[in-house]
Length: 354
Image (cartoon, rainbow, N blue to C red; front, top):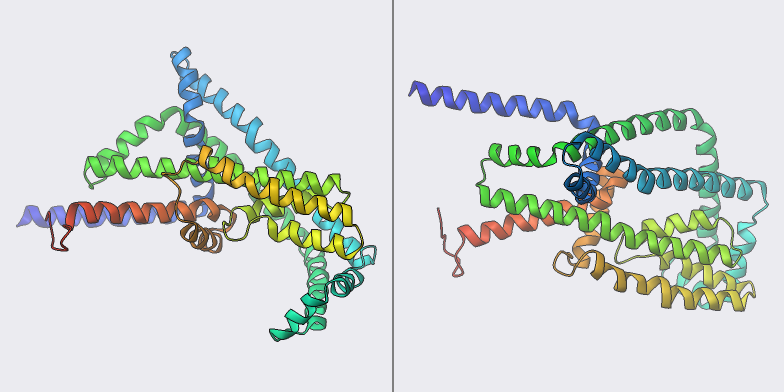
């Protein structure tokens, strides 16, 4: 009896200390997650280098990290900086009247009277919608001006988190296999289940980051290039927007390039509009069907409706990192229930193993 009480007290203390430690690390959840994701993706590179130079694990981990920084981190920082600059410039042009949004909206309205009729039929006032759009642009400019100091503080915080992510990635690359073995020994779920769940975590993380993100970046890059080739304003801005929207299977980059094509038709740019429409349908939209099965694999692909809901839910809960965390949680949810159905529920619905 005394031994049982001691055991329960220890388990309770263990849970409380673990909970306190998790809360302690909560502010660093995002860099920890991305360090794990990057380490998973680049671990085959580290293992390849280590195979040729087994006596220098620290140097091989550092070299892998340097390769990751050059291929991923620096390009993302450059694109993010240019994206912010183009967004600020576009908002300023709209505020100063260099871009007359009101006139452009009226051009589309005049060129496509059916759109106006459809909007009125569903009970939306077009003039009120236009005023809200213009007001949103002005509000965005005021927000950027009033929060310049906050943006600077967030930038400092961003680089701090980036440094922590890079620092942790080094150790995950070097000691990843030992940490996985330690985790399997510590988790009380059974070795077979733990291996299955960890394999699912690695599989879905690679599929989401390497597959979905590469597909989205490819679509956004193609969209930005065609915008630039056709002389449309802020091609980088719209390319990044198409990249983000391409992460949502039910939305996609078409929510950007299709209205842009309609606008070009409305302003009389028939050739440019036709080129953009054909390029969007034939090239941008087909990238998903060609690249995703190659990079992700059909076996790891979640249903589109589940990807949509988990991605949107992840974005609401975790911010921009949610596009990866949401589908990962959905995949782990399915994996847990598959294990439960296989091991504890028989085909007839009665309980199997106890």
